[in-house]
Length: 589
Image (tube, rainbow, N blue to C red; front, side, top):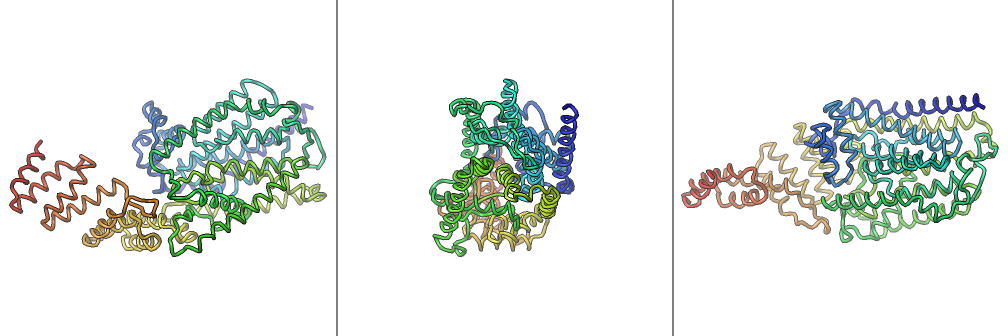
């Protein structure tokens, strides 16, 4: 017996090491990648609190801030720790992401093995998780450290929960609860964990009074080690057991709702009607599942249907038609899996894992202008991987006894995924390569056109930047950021007259996003008024300069003294000595 345990333990260790290496391998190229100018600046490179590194004050800031519209203190602390250890070298920040991804793959394998007692299928699920291209965004993007941390602690929580069910130790239960809190402090992805744990109680733990034999790799039936106890657990007992997890989830939901609301990230029902949200959510479930099977033309950003240009409109019922088709497919699969629940219980758990873990990100609460995002699949796809790993051998019938066939088939699938993943990772080398890939896949995204333009402008490639800003305006005419950016580009090119036209147009965009208008934010408005005020001074129009500078002084005191002096000089040259003296006096105060 001891020899058997020893041999099994050795195989588990060997598989864990191989999974870690397989998960990390494709991502080692990211150690030569750069920071991106999308969120990496707000999270790290232009964030004073994070750039100071780890410190008591930094930790207090992490727990008290809603910066970027999120409340995820552990994520901030993680980035601070990276700065303290590695400074601003992006390669090491990428490496930390890679190591967390490898650890997550190993944890997934271990928790499935503990729960099911099945070695090969658990390893295959973890390998799919490690190598799937849809997970590239969560790993190759430094700002998505929050995904990796949340998953790391979430998988750890489930692993301890399995051990708690097996051994009934209070310490194990409290450890699971603690790790869940850590997961929510990293990102509120797993706010639906209460429901996931109930699913796991059904399968593989079999605590719903359905004692069933778990299939082994050889097709024989044996008792699942996680099903020896609690087969008669009542629904009330199982729910009460999850109550502390529910309380932590509620706290996280409230804190993150406040955080998102504080930066205006939550779009109103007038901007995106509930019917459109539901239609997009249903369609997204279908697209995510298809992309899991055929991960082609993946992109960094997918515009929401409400943010596509009017000339792309294919009719008011097009989204409804796609959503209806997706809903029928989802309903058909759900019914089929429910009817097969006694013979194939993993179908229900895997399918509902997929559906429920997507709920916080599926778009019923619409954040920003994206329809969907590859990074949202990091945890949900595990459910579909479970269906594949357990379902395909069952479908093969007698063929599943031929291990060579299963191993070769699985190897071909994993090799194909690894190849696509390696290529997908390469697009994340820097901001320009990522945005160019995105506009080639999603050619109607005004946001990405502007981001690409900004990247080129920062490199001094002004004419190229202007062409992308103009592309953005072709997609969305009332796009204030594109107008403002064109003003900056023409100013950089030495044509202040053209720049002034675009600055003025950007300032005139109405503050009504619900009607498709996109005004610029306050910092850009202040700078636009400064540039227009300076232009008015050069044209000897002191009154116009005074109007522009009045807005600046209303919203910031940073430039007051210099503005007072410039206005005093301008009014003095025009012979308006009263105004000149008043501004000179203000400048001396």
